[in-house]
Image (tube, rainbow, N blue to C red; front, side):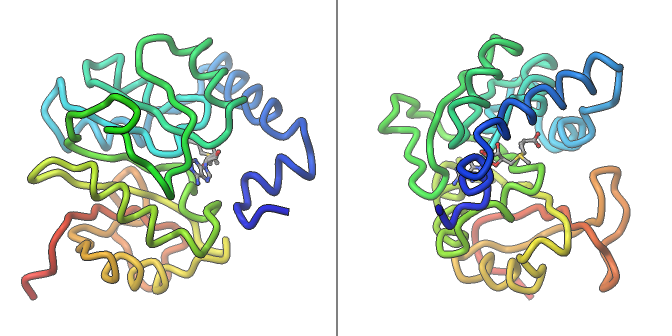
Length: 204
Ligand SMILES: C[S@@+](CC[C@H](N)C(=O)[O-])C[C@H]1O[C@@H](n2cnc3c(N)ncnc32)[C@H](O)[C@@H]1O
């Protein structure tokens, strides 16, 4: 079994990816609000910004960002999800790639990015050995002043304190911590973390 928890799920259950795609299609068809993360990201940058959706899944976040005028590149390790993104959300560039080795320049995408979004617990699905590499690879794709925003829940074998250690180890600074995509403050008791990260050490 793969140490990547998403790949492990798909190896155990070959229908897992299709189930996930249909789950989001049903929620969208039911009119559920699936755009909270995208609204957050849209508020961080000027319209027309360059935004990779890291671990994009079937593309709900990148799609909304593209709809409001950003240039979106969605990347995911799961080809079934990328196929669904291409079908359901034409417009952005959707690519199959492992975030731990992400090198968009080698895939023909030279220009760097304003904000990387990595939502939906992606960080907790990674092979733990690659968490720092993923953070470093995302950081390497930022232009000057660029930021990363990621969100994941507690109880998923990636303690927030470990995440903060990994962030520091790759030279990133957590410049804003929240407990939700609708801007609730992060406290010691929070069961969800939204972190805005920027390259460079903290001034404190
Ligand atoms: C719960 S889904 C979230 C999808 C999407 N971000 C969202 O919020 O709707 C987690 C995603 O992380 C992706 N993922 C996990 N490990 C990855 C890796 N090493 N590289 C790229 N994608 C990865 C999975 O394929 C899956 O699409």
